[in-house]
Length: 428
Image (cartoon, rainbow, N blue to C red; front, top):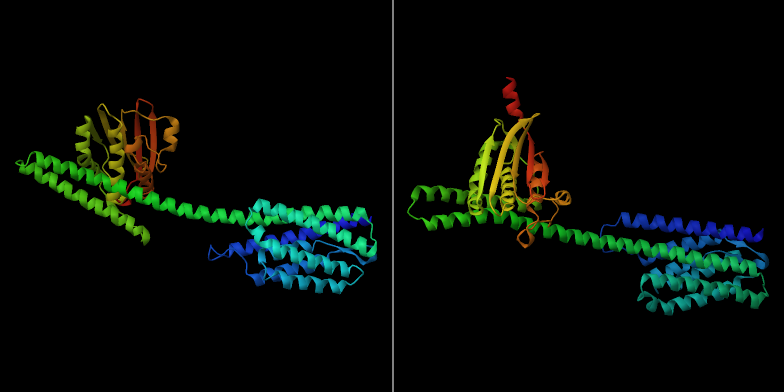
């Protein structure tokens, strides 16, 4: 009966220690303003360890001859390990002073145990701090087991105490509890450190994606400008044609400037202003811009405009979407082909379908479309074109659907809500 009471008392003691540790860790980490500082101050560690020592002794189980069994050694070890050498001496004094309150014949052995443990932890602390957290947990467990052996040998020598059953229960419970408590603490610390590393990695990934996406979006208009300048250089005497090419080249430079400004605005975002966008006009402009690439690839562009309404959004963003989709379609037809552009209205939405008869994609490739750095162009692609298409379309409350079959072609379906002003005009 006494042994059952001892085991139950030690389990309750362990439960209280775990609850306090979890509450303190969750509160401290959730209110952490500076992510680098994840450690409690030495004073707070001392206060917390003292509180747990007192709780453990209040929950102690008294056996014969004035001996008290509890798990006070666990918070003492916690304070010494995580608080360092500054915390260890005052914590040892506090534990000895607290033990005097309970008196009994076991006071002398408790003092000797505390002093020996404090000295051992004091000198082993630098060595333990250099080991991995897994090895530290095993070291702490072994240390607790040695403490339990002394807790039996000292009463045996000083008081002729021979209750082997009580010692076995205490030794097993103390060692197992030490392992569990320190494993939990180290896991919390390790998990939090991994979380910090993940945050840093995510920030670096955002910067990387931003830089690659920006270079991708700026490269498109610069490529167009380069192509038009080459055409002008090939036939400098054709003034009317060169004038038109120059205008388009200048507009593409303006578009590149606008793209750069949009990325710069990420640092200081502002409410987006939507205007009425003439989709027919933007499709025509996109066709003019992409035409040199289509001629080079031997691709015929067919347009069938069946809508008569506009949408609300940003014309530059819509043009980026159209150019990216049309460019991907043309590049998917290495041996030439037909790029079909069809626009129509359906259920209050303006739909633009851009279809090619190129290499197509598998179902798995379609599922991954829009992921950063996923590209079917090998070294020539960044995988950020379609990611930009999805993002910009979503910013204008649009949707993007992809239908594709391997070696048969791909169809990109863009859908946007029609302008509210157009709806009102039709009702009037």
